[in-house]
Amino acid sequence: MFRQFDVQKAIQAAGELLRFERNRMSYIRLLKLLYIADRDALRESGMPLLGSRAVAMDHGPLHSDVYNLVKGIHENTAMWSRFFSTIGYKVEATDQPDNGLLSPYEIKKLREVSEKYAPFSDVEICDQMTHTFNEWIKNYQPGTSRPIQLEDIVDAVGRAGDKQSILDDLTELEEFDKLMSEV
Image (cartoon, helix red, strand yellow):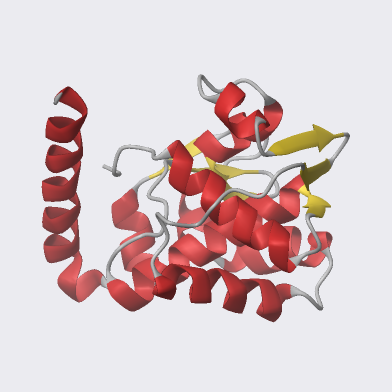
């Protein structure tokens, strides 16, 4: 169970990370930093930053919706492509999205993650650091893209004690999102 994917918020979060990195980085780095920021936000606030569906893949966990945007196979690729282009294994910001959907906390979290992981190579982030995440360890099978349940992430970040409250809050938000999308 995850909140409905908000492509505009994902674009804004990616734009913030790319801005911190001079508007260009490997797409694997972008995917990992977004995942780590989302995970940190869940640990600290009880709410994920993006809430997109997570998957366990060979190079660690990531948000499947954002990965599909980067690859150009998501239903909202045209919206993504207004701001970013993928050239080989790099994502480049071609236009800077605004950040009005991101709270000051979320912008700060993205900056913190960017700064914290700046000294590390993509390989170190992917194959060493994210491979220590318990939710990835629990769900990973070589050569696959297996879903990671939100409950596994909540447990892994140390929020098992208030897991039900977090899940209830997210269920309410998901219902609200569905109601608002029908208006």
